[in-house]
Amino acid sequence: MTATSGRTPLVIRSIPDAIAAVPYVLGFHPADSLVVIAYAGPHDTCAVRVDLPGDPYETGPAARRIAALLGGNGFRRALLLGYGPEHRVTPAAAAVLGRLPAEGLKVDDAARVADGRWWSLLCHDTACCPREGHPYDISASVVAAQATLAGQVALPDRSELVRSVAPLTGPARASMSRATDRAEDRFLSWARQGLSPARIRSRLCDEGLTLLTRLRGRRPPAPPPAEQPYPADEPRASEGTPAPGPPKAPGRDIRPDEPHTDPSLDSRPGVEPSATSARTRPRADPDKSREEEPQAGGQPRAGREPTGAVRRLPGTGPHGTTRPGDDEIAWLGVLLTSLRIRDEAWVRIDEERPHDDIAFWRDVLCRIDEAYASAPACLLAYAAYCAGDGGLANVALDRAAPDYSMGVLLRDIIEAGIPPARLRMNMTSDELAAAYAEVDDLAFPELPRRRREERPAS
Image 1 (cartoon, rainbow, N blue to C red):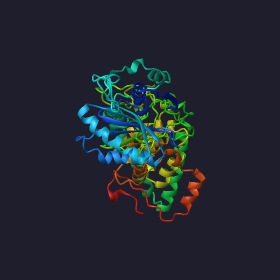
Image 2 (cartoon, one colour):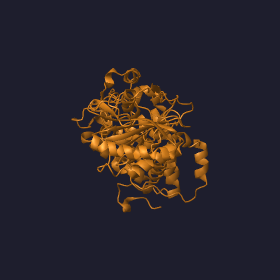
Image 3 (cartoon, rainbow, N blue to C red):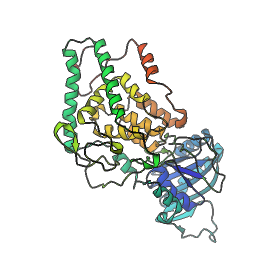
Image 4 (cartoon, one colour):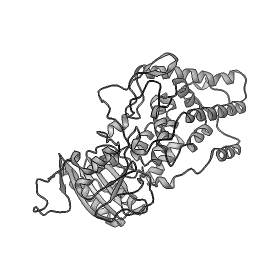
């Protein structure tokens, strides 16, 4: 079986291989979790992670959900790893192992992992599976060496992934708040100039297209996935991008040429889908706050990058590109309140190579005023989903308002376990413009931070 981390195939031939691969497949080291790696299906490999329930005998709903998701997507073989103490892992794993065959999946192996040892959950012969378990050392694994050589880093835990999309604090936040005030004043000045709602909508569209084009033009082609500055997210219960190519026969090779990530299940608490891929990301110092020092003009200067980002020179963005200033980010937030501009940003995401989009929208999400976070959060989630990063998609969606339309749609897609390869916009900017040209009653954008009486009349 071959699992793909980034696009680096990680061949799994044993339980120790699987233990070494999982952190790179999920993007972080799991704890108190069940991880199911499924293969031998039309979408290559899929890894699904779920939190261990508080009551290990209440795993039934999650077990049914995992089995239905994997079986419904055509996978026919699986390997299970349970991370945690025996009294919690064994009953929870038994519930999942009992459901998988009913959905047409054959379980090739299963083990519990804890404290540097693993115990088989299928073999009870002490001659080959001693009571004290088998020691393992990820650092000495060929699988881990392959992933490391490819430039991949597994985060310490899921909380680091959450922090990678958390809003900046301190002076950087204060600077963005001032920039947001300026952006809102700029928009409201159009109404004060006596422009009609139709003219304001038209001008908003023109400004949005111009800004998106300018910001997109600053970003060079993405390097290979393994060289990305951010990790894949977390567990992949269904996060990944299916790719053609038969997986290896049991022996066991979990290798999809592209990860299948159906970021469907979230692990809060439940199933969290993830693609079988991991991205490069340096470990952040959890004791330091995520701040950046502002300098004249609202541009951030030497300070901490958002957690999960690579260190780079002041004023630079992903891969050394010019990073948008605070005023550009704030104005983009205002423009994205227009569904026309939000959807334009959506169709411009490179679904085949979304890594630059992930880096860009993550930076925007960390810096933008919270009132304007929903659109960037959903755009990041979509790009992450396309890359097979169900974990990142899930934590990004947590930053969006619960009733935000795009977020509702993406959550439904993730919950259904729809493979990313089936989720393609297949629409050009010209086609989007033509579609919106037929809409006469497009809602007028609102500024969420402003009182209603300050908004232009529609």
